[in-house]
Picture 1 (cartoon, rainbow, N blue to C red):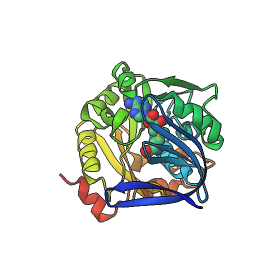
Picture 2: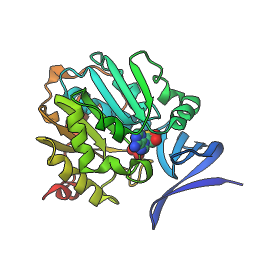
Picture 3: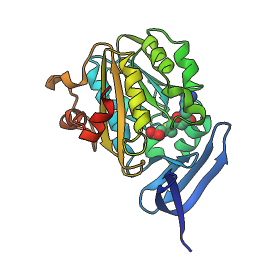
Picture 4: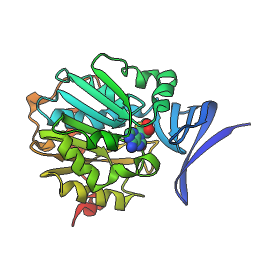
Length: 276
Ligand code: SAM
């Protein structure tokens, strides 16, 4: 008998994956956590029934949320990740030699624990000496930080449950305060097919908080609709003005210098979301 998992991406549409085995199915203090092995995408982390990351396609999201801002900032020494407990963004951040310290603040220690155990290719750098892992509410961490970070990446779940505060204008204002005077920030901002209001509102709030705001996209097959967005806010540096010599030669599978630029070329229906 075959077992299939379906993520309902809307009330009327979903994605389904054939499951080989279930490693973990646990209600943590914050969310339902499932770790399964799939036939097509390897091990898969689910939170509250939503695909968070898979061994097969995780590199797209983790490379794109990290290398665009880390090349945009000319000398990113101190980086903060809000969420990101699967460790993939940390793995990518550490590919930048300028980074002296990467702090990860995830509210749920169980995500970190099970990612280390079942997603070693993703979580394998969480014990690196440059990494400081804290189990805490990212909203509270941002509230008590001031001019601390060069780059902040918000790798959170959807704006439900523990992440609901991470998509508010107040949070983006807190990020601006936590960043140094030339800081850069990126948040994952879901998909333009089913979450148009989220993207529109986030872009509007970030635009009112940062002098430079840009949206970029990537193709992520296991995320709702397969087209994902990232919203970048910057106090000084424009991601479209990164010079050729700034780019590092990085060990990547999706991100390239050309993809860095092309990702900001938006389909018309996405660009139209950003018009006031
Ligand atoms: N790439 C995924 C996506 O785009 O949906 C996100 C993956 S990562 C596992 C999401 C993390 O956000 C989870 O580990 C969750 O515990 C964390 N998270 C949710 N709310 C949080 C909060 N308020 N503070 C810190 N971490 C939070």
